[in-house]
Length: 600
Ligand code: OXD
Ligand code: MN
Image (tube, rainbow, N blue to C red; front, side, top):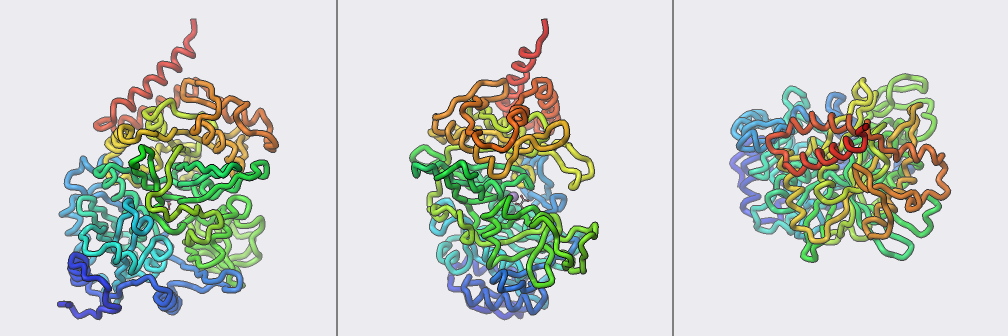
């Protein structure tokens, strides 16, 4: 079948002409020595893992302590998503909006085409068919990723439902995401992550880092997904999904959006504190959520992923026991440190670092060194099936019905622990204005609030103002609207200590949220939203001073006036397309605050 001199291995069990023609076209462009079709079998996993070990892509860890686990060290200049090199390639710049870098599709195909030309010479092109979402789900989407990275194949195997089952689900359809990836020489000068939402296509070149190359995740499930969602009447969100089971056996499903590094995976896997006898939290997903109105008028959510690509530093048995259990076997670690006996290590794993380690770059490290042992963005890729709290409904074709949506950020002041939106439009305003403070470690200057609407700023595949409009439009399509909430676990006292204990204690706030969603708990009206009455919060046995909790929940009207002034700058950026309802919400709050603080 080939007009180029390549070997086609493991002939595909598909006669999908659209797929075969596209793979042929890409092979002619990239000119790999071999084309290998991935079937997702155990035999294939064994073979590719052996190859990865032989070529130093993976380092075997101690298989007595960590069965089936491997370490990957990436190029030190290729350790994170690259927003400045990520483009949305729509026909017009306006469609991509001020929130995205834009390149015209013609320019992008030409520019990247030159880079892809012959990029896989001497290498193998793997064809990875994968499904985002439960197999057979009407909400699921099919993608095919072509890549010259065996690390990508082994990660996609964990993160998605991949292989023959995806080809079977695709059948003869031309409807699949076309993803092309080549590592090239990992030169940041020749690195581009381009999305073509109008062609359902992704081209990624010059990187080996997860968020840039596991194309099902941020690229398809969020950037392309959000674009398709607006056209097709559903929502692709940067949200966890959890089921909260009460002692009565009743389970309430909740989604939550927090910007990166605000504890989404920890919250998705929360273990209720001892005082919550009989309560259980089930993880449906920890990062991405696709939601669609169901015929019953409720909003139904699926997790398109099948694994966790979580940040390792800070993960330990106190912060996230379920994650620790999930990464004990069959896990790929990226850029963590290694102990002399082949175990893994990162900052915040245990109280004291071992005396000696091999750091994330492969260099010897001794306790007392000021260098980090693991990269701050080091990761684990673990199968969701390892999670002891995995929801039994994770493979339900229609997903789970959502009763509450939570927005949150990292704010040292101003934003109370919890509040509830007055209605859907106010909830969209809360999500649209959410922000998170930068930490000193990340950017040198602490306490700068970065607005990150719905935690989607780096992931929305089109104009953000139109995205808010899509959220508002969804109100008409959902008869039983989920209630919307805002949380902040990170409020600090004057001495910079955290006022709210966080972690498993967040369960107490989650309970109020569920009670409100089910119409069971009281609330008081504040100028910025409904807030809990103290009697409705389950604070018994909480090992934190009551004054701290009161301070963490305090709403300071003057601080809120400053907050609104800060939001103005953000609104300005999107003024061409910002829905008037969102602007009006801010103005209503401004009027309320002015009236409450007026003197005389
Ligand atoms: C992630 C992110 O990797 O949000 O999930 O950056
Ligand atoms: Mn994320």
